[in-house]
Length: 187
Ligand code: PNS
Image 1 (cartoon, rainbow, N blue to C red):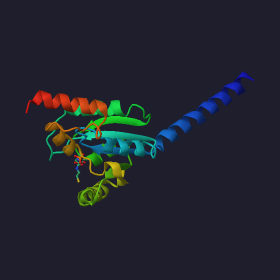
Image 2: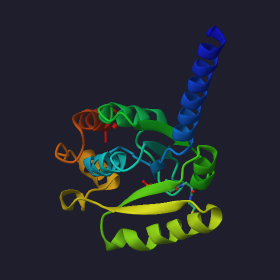
Image 3: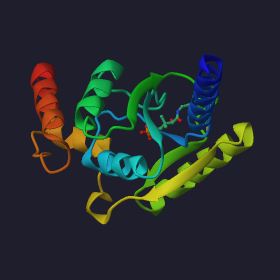
Image 4: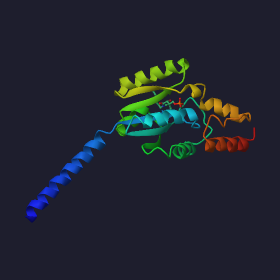
C-alpha cells in the first residue's frame, strides 16, 4: 500500500516536472532591442503590445556604435525597469555585441521592432535580413501607434536640450531625468 502510494506520488512528480520543463522549453520569448537613450512613450507602446504576444519579452539595451549617449546603460535600464514594472513578463538586460548572439545564448526566437514610418523601413529591413541569414532569428515589425509615429529618443534629447517640453513624449521619471541631465551639462 505504502509502496503503491509512493510510486503514484513519484509518477505525479515526474509528470509535473516534465510539464514544467516542456513549458519552459516551449516558452515564446522575444527581445525588444534598442539604445533606449532614453525610453520614450513610443517604445513603451511597442513593449506593452509585445508583452501581450509573447510569454516573455526581454528589453535589451544595446550599444549602437553609431550614436553617442546621454544616459549610461545602467541608467537606461533602470528607467525601463521602473516604467515597465506593471508588466509581469518583462525582463530588462543589456548587451554589447551582436544581437543574434544574444538571442542564441538566451533561447530567444524573435526580435520585435517598432516601425514608425517608411524612413525606418530600409535600414530595419536590411538588419532583419542580415539577422535572419546569420542565425535564423525572425524579426517581427510592429506598426507604431499613429500618436507616436514622429517620436524618437534623438528628437526628445534635442528638444530637452533646448528647454522644450517633452512631458507628452516620455514617462514622468524620464522627463525628470532629462531635465536633471540638461541642467548638469549646463549648455
Ligand atoms: O534604438 P536603436 O539605436 O535604433 O537600436 C539599434 C540596435 C542597437 C538595435 C542595433 O544597432 C543593433 O542591433 N546593434 C547590435 C549589433 C548588431 O547586432 N548589429 C546588427 C548587424 S546587422
